Length: 105
Length: 403
Image 1: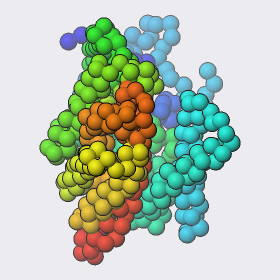
Image 2: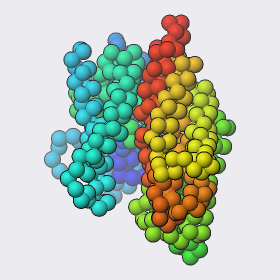
Image 3: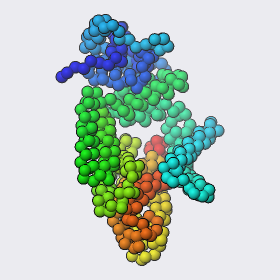
Image 4: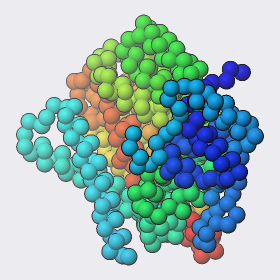
């Protein structure tokens, strides 16, 4: 099957998750960090998970009175994809990076 | 707490009135403006008559489902909003809905909660098609062009309707494909599917036949009316084959809905036939029937469903099915009846006025049956559901708590 180049936002999510691979991250944290809306982030996370690039788990030490959150990190194939994207982005003039919230362009 | 609830209900009332006022402004803009100032007054009275049942129905739904004193929710709107939208996700993605809801529960700021919830609602209701999107868009585009050309050549008068209908069905198909397993989940009962499909097919076939056989109807079938017909029929088809889960949880409600719809259609046919055979009240047409019968039939149909299930929600479901299916049936029956009335001095079926070309009935049927009838009847169904749920409440019935 032909593999399509991921969108800029997907690349940003993958690279953000690859910065510290063992660390689990939750959805809102990624929204804040990448300045992405939930309506953009969750479809990306769903697709990555369905392609086996993202691992998901429920939070084990959720604060009292709050439901456990879904946590995400890259799988082995997700990390391989991140390495490819990282290599490709360093060869381009404008490396992939979405602006963190509040940072001026 | 009570004064806050009252404020919410007053705000809800204002929203309902504003919607009807906006609708009236649009109608005035599209139609010829009234010639006499008194006509504005009568329009305002008519607006109040139609809006009042909706205000009552909206307040009943608010108290049952959304008010701070209801059993099923809190004053926080983003949470129930997201919870409702998450139910639209297919079963293989249901975990993601739970994940979004859990994430929302950790957010504190009101603006942040709204922004996050709305983004998630968009994801749940309009999931992406992934790599199937180009193929589906191509198929829909080819279908639109093909149908447009074919119908445009065979029956130009119905081309606007056909293209709009195919576009809307195409969009609905794309949503269904994005949800992949959605169609197999929560199908309504066979009775609903049969009546709904026969109704939609009958409405399309009879409209086309009427336009072919009675050229005077072509002038009454302007693009706005054609688009209205397409929107209503595409929406009806979509609700019939892929209704939201909130409409399919009660089989009793579906049975009551089908039954009440058949009563509505059957009584409409009998009313018209009796008037023709007895020649009494021909001057009034079926306007009185359309004014009073939906009130009674929707009220009692929904009340029975709510009473049997002990659930307000079941009654509201029955009201929606009755309005949807009953409207289609009355529209289908309208056309054969029109011909009988027209033979008597060119009478219109709607109001019995004489001397009109038969084609005027097509516009009457679309505006007064497909649009007016459900708008008028539905709130009485909701009010009936509320009354039925109170009568059918049983302390031991677990559904009462979730009504």
